[in-house]
Image 1: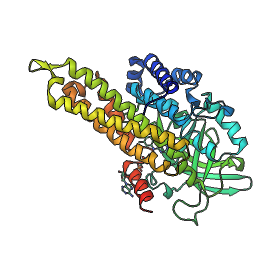
Image 2: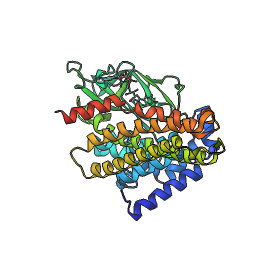
Image 3: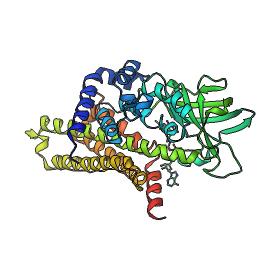
Image 4: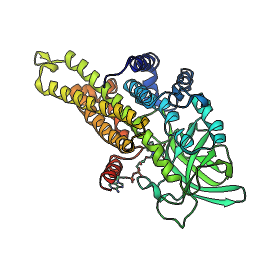
Amino acid sequence: MILSDKYKLLRKNFRNFAETEFTTEIQEQLDREGGFNWDLHYKMAKYGFMGIKLPVEYGGQGGDTLAYVLMVEEFARVCPVLSIYANTPNSLGSGPLLTCGTPEQKKKYIPPLASGEKKIVFALTEPGAGSDAGGTLTRAVKDGEYYVLSGRKCFISGAPLADYAVIYAKTNPALKGNKGISMFIVDMKLPGVSLGKPELKMGINGYPTSDIILENVRVHESDLLGPLDKGFSTALKTLDGGRLGVAAQSLGIAQCCLEESIRYAKERKQFGRPIAKFQAISFMIADMATEIEAAREMIYSTALAKDAGEKDAPMKCSMCKLFASEMANRVAYKAVQIHGGYGYMRDYKVERMYRDARITTIYEGTSQVQQMVIAGNLLK
Ligand SMILES: Cc1cc2nc3c(=O)[nH]c(=O)nc-3n(C[C@H](O)[C@H](O)[C@H](O)COP(=O)(O)OP(=O)(O)OC[C@H]3O[C@@H](n4cnc5c(N)ncnc54)[C@H](O)[C@@H]3O)c2cc1C
């Protein structure tokens, strides 16, 4: 897609920010030690990135989905985990509130997200309910003006940093599967809320992931989000946008792998010539670039389709996530191959990109779940 000057400028600004601020030192420290870089979080917030796609009336920048995917792509090209910092408040964090929050809830919870002051996490997955999110066992039982929540959520991105969590809980066990589930905004400081230990992950280190445990947590009915028993459809709507974000993240990872591979293949000499001169290597690079371009076109046009409210946009978001995440893994694999033994060493960026790429086919719906969504749409 030929980007207009406005988007070209935006892309340039995102790239400049990432290349200047996401220093190699910061990236390596996050990967080695995990944790979270609050300085960068606040800096991204100062530049408005936390609210790039959030409405101006709630303190956001009012950007569109194309601006958002360009941001995630450019940030992930330099550092995939740091792209998550700015991605989450624009996607899974704000999604349920924007989709069905009351005006009071929106006014209370969205502006501090856009300003980076507060963090809300999206807590759907449970130990026994991953792809089958309808199998949620967390319960919410009405008691006067309160709902009493008990259960355990797992693998929640950003849980150790969170001020609030959007928790999905069964409110009507008589309704089976994904019916009878409701959403609640839970203040993480409420009595009965605790965290599991941060998970030790293969990649995207520097954005902590942990369980959220709820033991008789009393949530006021004003923090019920959206209609009672209908939380699952909001989850699906929120995930559409999130999936496009993961697709953009995958695209950025793949782009980095391509650039590193081109540079390395031109420099590295074997048999008296740069390895780029061997057709086996140059064809790998040609394939990588072609797949990346296909994903980019698909993602940008889906961003436009989403904003235009096209009927098949949700399915296209799944297609983008499926294709781009699998593509990023193929590309990262080839990038390590082109780097030979050096690609297996931590000193080379493709080693971390290879590990970071791996999550993209798993979170926000595995590739198999995307195939189920796409097939379900086509075969109705
Ligand atoms: C780092 C990380 C961060 C995460 N962040 C969050 C978060 O912030 N919030 C949140 O709610 N969740 C989060 N998740 C959870 C993530 O969304 C789930 O891990 C994912 O949906 C898969 O669920 P599962 O791990 O239980 O795997 P399972 O559902 O057990 O799947 C195992 C395998 O079986 C396949 N499978 C399952 N059902 C079918 C089927 N019907 N047909 C074909 N294949 C099938 C899957 O595709 C997969 O290959 C995160 C996970 C990770 C690893």
